[in-house]
Image (cartoon, rainbow, N blue to C red; front, side, top):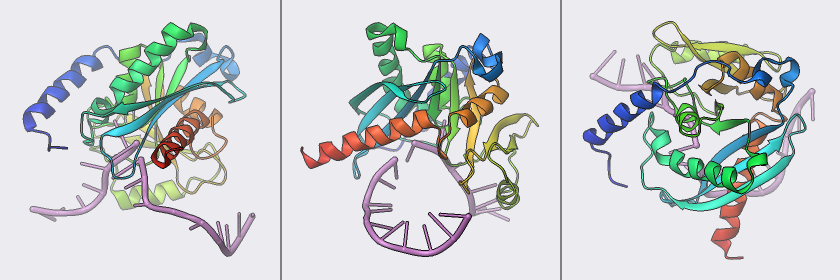
Length: 249
DNA sequence: GCGACAG
DNA sequence: ATCTTGTCGC
């Protein structure tokens, strides 16, 4: 994969800022405001898994889980060829095209199973330009999206790493949160201790058509383990698909 | 000046 | 993202 020219990055930044104009940063759905998310029945999860030494070939997964039972009611696994490199801050340009296609296939094939919200493996507003992959996918599909990252993306204004690490270790009970504040003073995301047994938090941020508060509550309510079940299932199933494929079964 | 940077 | 099993502990 060739290094990305500065020209391309400027082009991508420009596309992000245009799409960002269409982003909705608050709750728009009734279930988002309802007690116990009443009215929410389907939560989607997306993820990509790769072959070990392969930058190009990947398996894109879209799963839909029932809510609140968190049982898989739909899955689509599709081998795809990635054409963009991974560059921090521009993950969406590498992964989003295939996720959008998967959503569109579902909308056409089985409209009744289209998720009411998608949990995305990566960040939403917790991003250099407050427009991570969860925002990107949300705007392109106009579906509510939440960003859940397993690792912290360094964003300008976040506290010094050492200090932040201490704060994160202080998270005691499941559901505990710690705000991640950008340089403007705005809270861009929340570190969330998503389950009792996890040492390391997940990093939740709003993608599209959700408030940060709702994003955090929803993420927590989808966690049987550290990684919320929709993303975890997309992850498990896509890497299993890859594993079988590389064996030749 | 360097560190720190989703997947 | 990926390379990787068992193992220690609640």
